[in-house]
Image (cartoon, rainbow, N blue to C red):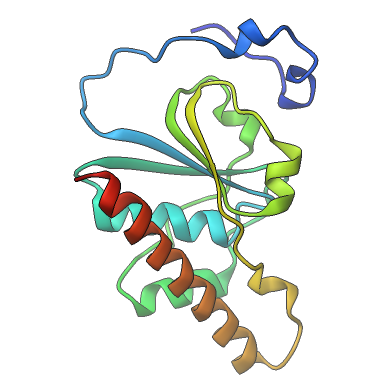
Length: 166
């Protein structure tokens, strides 16, 4: 597989760079990449839910345009619904450029603006979810925001990927 240039320079390249064929796969599962700015909450939750709910049809990954670390409250609220993301780690979008994905999903407006195209993605989807870490109130209210976003992501994953798989 050829090395790709960093994402920040790919937009100025000839668009033929973006038109490469998917590799032959031994698996029938579609590969899905969730992208968010820090790859610490929303994209991690989406990766966890898709792998937990539909691992027979999809293989999910996540990355960030400016990765940080997986947020502890994201790990906690996902565990409340039986999804363990404690072993997931953050990755840079640039680490994923050499990989092909059937579906690439941006889960925040910032990531969509920074990454409007993804080389190696057949279908691009955008769905903006609120950043629960942007609220700096009392701990219980912060946890409630994380739970609300978690539930919104789960509902969207069920609707988008559950129907699609039929």
